[in-house]
Image (cartoon, rainbow, N blue to C red; front, side, top):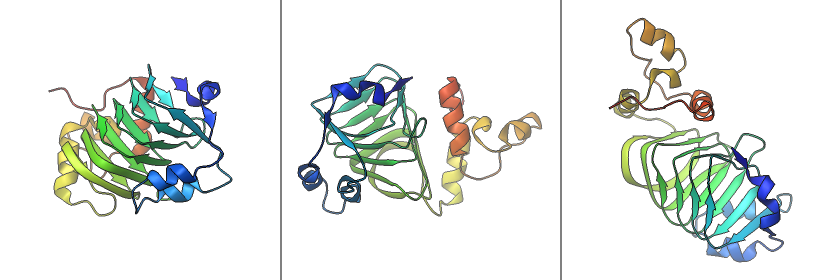
Length: 208
């Protein structure tokens, strides 16, 4: 896994964030984080390609597309913040911190936004096998989604659809219930279990 701070020398320190804030959508909460002087923001001009799993442990603006050949986790070493003014392309995304995407978010697998102190904002559309939000301030448009679980009060139909495609091990108590021949309880998958399986290289989705 690549730790983003190890690439810090490749980025410019963004002393004046006002120009970036002005390019965000008119309702973007990320502008507040950009204007927070206690946060050290970094800037990359143009598209950025990461060749492996990414531990995003800094606050970074990518003025272009960000392509991650693996999963992106912004809560491994430290809480990361991400502004991508183009598209974000990943295998999977698990986000505790704040994410703003000016274009589309395209994930092969899961997008999981967790925790209410930070934000999840996509001006374009979210495309993924599963989008799961849990107590997260979110603004986005749905693209090609096999499953979508809303942030606060998801209907049972959404929870059932997620349970049908995700392995039992991403649910609290799911592995034990699977050994008993029972499905996991009808709830959101565990953020912590999803993160652990991604880091261990274990599948999140049932075999076709």
